[in-house]
Amino acid sequence: MKRSKIILSPHCDDALLALGGSIQLWQPCPITVLTLFGTCAWTVGDSKSHKEITALNRKEEKLALSAAGCASVCLEYKEVLLRGYSEWNAVPGKSDSILQNQLERELLEKIPSRSEVYIPLAIGGHTDHVLTRNAALKLSERLRKKLCSIYLYEDLPYAWYEDVVSHALRLPVQDKPILMDIHRVIESKIKLIANYKTQIGPDEINKVNGYARSIIENRIMERLWQLKE
Ligand SMILES: [Zn+2]
Image (cartoon, rainbow, N blue to C red; front, side, top):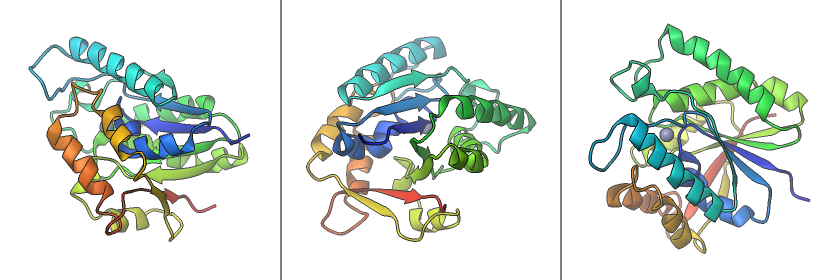
């Protein structure tokens, strides 16, 4: 029996954007996507109220994750633009440190013992990704006591713009990343992420596709970084 996996997804779509290929390669395996900020104020389409966008985005997430064979748990924390910030990559204020404590408690309760835990590297500095990563890293000792291992994934489409390797190596990760060859499943990864019509247009799809081909020349990859034991 494979160890169960739990992927911490700051928003609906982050797990499949970053790991939509690996998830398919891991199947059959118990995989749960735990979305923390399951609310949404922004869309690539025509503007709507955040309640309407959130409802659509949740439907997209349900559809995409069930197609990927994942269980889904969606929490309703307010995303950064609904917490009074005007920028998606705002520096977390005082109220966010209270929020981070809340996230830590929630994660500790929801992450099962002996699981593999996948968390964002927070490439691009999206405030909600940073909070998710920091909450999980803060728990790393306690998660190890629960016999969990922790891996960091490369946030997309942000990884397209950034020096990902330098970013990863500033964290306490093992020097050698884990490479997942997703060439057999890239087409179905693209189909999975195209479900998120409120969030992902042709431009984002091109970046996800291009990034997979940029990690190693002539290969199509996703990459993970294991936290040092
Ligand atoms: Zn996100």
